[in-house]
Length: 137
Image 1 (cartoon, rainbow, N blue to C red):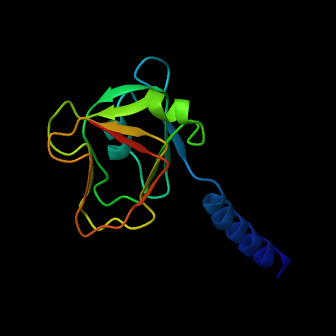
Image 2 (cartoon, helix red, strand yellow):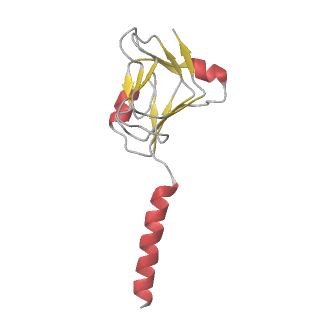
Image 3 (cartoon, one colour):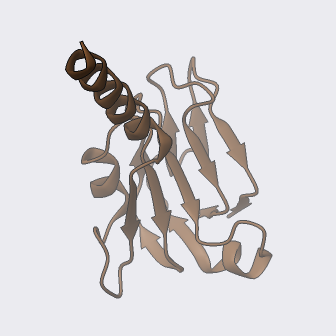
């Protein structure tokens, strides 16, 4: 009986601890990190992941593809860090796309979004959390 209770408690602790911490992956186009592009980090992440983006200019267009991820600069409360962490669409398409039913579980925080050919941020039937970002031409 004690062994059965211990086994159940072990399973409960294992399951609850797996939800206690979000998986964090890093992006840096100039140094050691998990990924050098934000889209590669998105493609290889799962719901609940946090993607931390180091300062730099990332020439790419990103799509969340319905994933409940957080993409954030290293310090969203520091405007200088927000300006220094930029996704640049190079004048092509939407810089950031939410078009797969994303909700507030999909977040972009503390990043400058610039030079979209169509839109800086495109939302279609989605309601992500967009906070502490700057939009620039």
